[in-house]
Image (tube, rainbow, N blue to C red):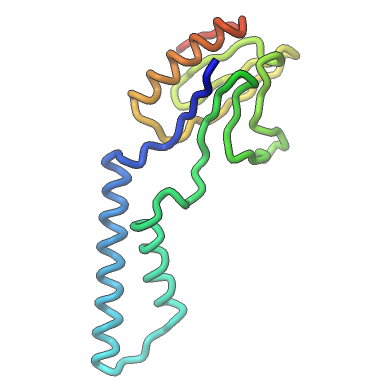
Length: 151
């Protein structure tokens, strides 16, 4: 069984639009600072760092913002990078402890053998990625003999 990653697609219109707006904001803030230097006006450097650094990060390094991604392999289902949730539960679930998986809306509902259930929020995804996740989970649950339900 090969592994599957559901990562945020950074080539969608939304991310391209955010990069465009960030690049525009970067250009405007640099232009404002040059005009202030030419007119001998005071520059507030703390504000200047925020006005230049934040748009630069969003426009030139969109993948460095620490997005989570869903990782499914022969060991189990996990949201990586590993984070402990507010309730103290880890976000890695082994196949031998799962009784049923349900793909509902923007979540994956995982029913454990012990009777408890967990919901994993899917990262921002497209319909094509959701279809690939559906097909992969269907195959993986058949292989691991876990019940799969789609709602």
